[in-house]
Image 1 (tube, helix red, strand yellow):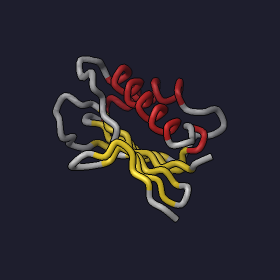
Image 2 (cartoon, rainbow, N blue to C red):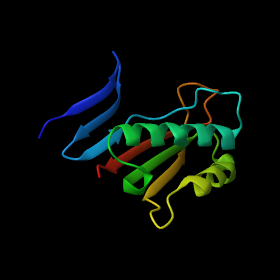
Image 3 (tube, rainbow, N blue to C red):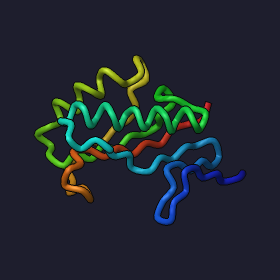
Length: 116
C-alpha cells in the first residue's frame, strides 16, 4: 500500500490517503466574518472539494469530528450540517467545544472517509 499526500505544506498536508482511507486535516473557514451557519457551510464545502479530489464524497465519510469555539452555537452548525449531510449516510460524529487556534474561527471539522 502506498501513502499519498495532497496539498503538502511545511506544517501539514490537507489530505492523506492510505489503504483506501482518506484522512483530512482540520478544515477551517477562510471568511471569518460569517456567522456559524456561514462558516460551517464554507468548511463543509472544503470537505466536499477535498473528498472529490481524493476520489470520494460525503456519502463515504466514516467519522467526523466537529470542534466549535462556542457549543451554544450547535443549533446553527446543525442547520448547515443537516442541509449538507448525505441522506441516509449520516456518519458517526462527535461535536465538542474547543479553544481553536484562531479566535475568529467558530468551527473546525476533521473527516475520515473511504475511497470509492
